[in-house]
Amino acid sequence: MKNIHSNIYRPNYANLKKAKKNIENNNVIGLPTETVYGLAASAYSDKSVKKIFKLKKRPSFNPLIIHFKNLECVKKDVICNNYFIKLYRAFCPGPITFVLNKSPSSKISKMANAGKKTVAVRIPKHKVARKLLKILNVPLAAPSANISSRLSPTSASDVVDEFGNQIKFILDGGRCKIGLESTIIDLTHKPTILRQGAITSKEIYKILRKKIAVIKKSKVIKAPGQLKFHYSPGIPVLINKNYPRKNGAFITFGKKFKSSKNHFNLSKKNNLREAANNLYKTMRKIRKKNYKSISICKIPNFGIGRAINDRIKKASYKWQSK
Ligand code: AMP
Ligand code: MG
Image (cartoon, rainbow, N blue to C red; front, side, top):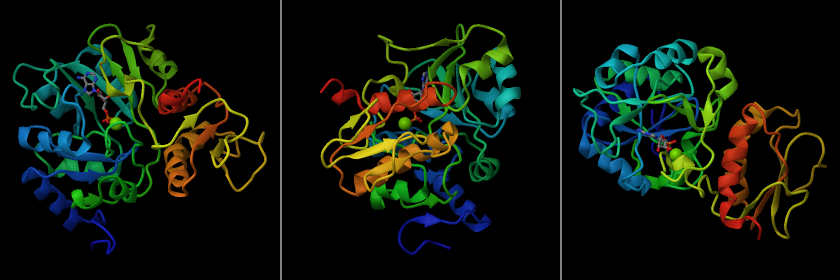
């Protein structure tokens, strides 16, 4: 059944088959994953991939994450190394993306990899994404379903918010469990985290028993997550603050700040996972309420807190020291 207000579809068998037809017809659909919603299309089709770049207004040099159903399918397009196999066993399916070398016989669209010789590989855990991948014969190119540099969507209605009627078919998988984009780790040389996420460098270290580098600043942009200005709600964002600006909202964490009409608490229980899950949803809510800015209190910088700080720092980039 179709949701009467939009292009959102319940993920029953009939609609999964419709989603499959859409992918086979080179259309782009909205797809839930455990991290954020994606704009998904066949990774083997230039025509489909081109549509994703156009919809997202994404620069063509920024490659897309490719979603696979299992290891067997990954092996068709990618050269798997030992690091990957160990991490795959520990974390997949799950919220982690691996940059690996593309195999010479790969059918993945060159455009999807932005002409690179590497592929960003993800095996998502969300059951709707898994069900769809299971009935497809192709992997899915699926970047986050937002216009480039904006907030990622964490519910089906956020995708409508971003694209209106441009995306005709969105599978509804409810609110994303994690709510922040996947951890990205480059495994083509020494393991290097390109983007922080729910799976932390500490957890990865425990599996590989090897120092895990974390990219801070890079001259060569390997991932748009590394671009300085990203994850923006479209209004000024100010971090490490103790109060809001005039006509602004204040995002808090824990019990330090009292509640007030313009205060939005990410987690009263001091729970960073809950805070990560509420971050984008809260920023969208604040923007819709027409506040003119968002001030954010200091967020603890450990565990998934590092990913939260990475996102809010980038969202605030234009307004730092102003
Ligand atoms: P998104 O799907 O919008 O969260 O963004 C996908 C992220 O994966 C971006 O930061 C991409 O630049 C990154 N990515 C995709 N493919 C590669 C690759 N081959 N090498 C490095 N980063 C990649
Ligand atoms: Mg993105």
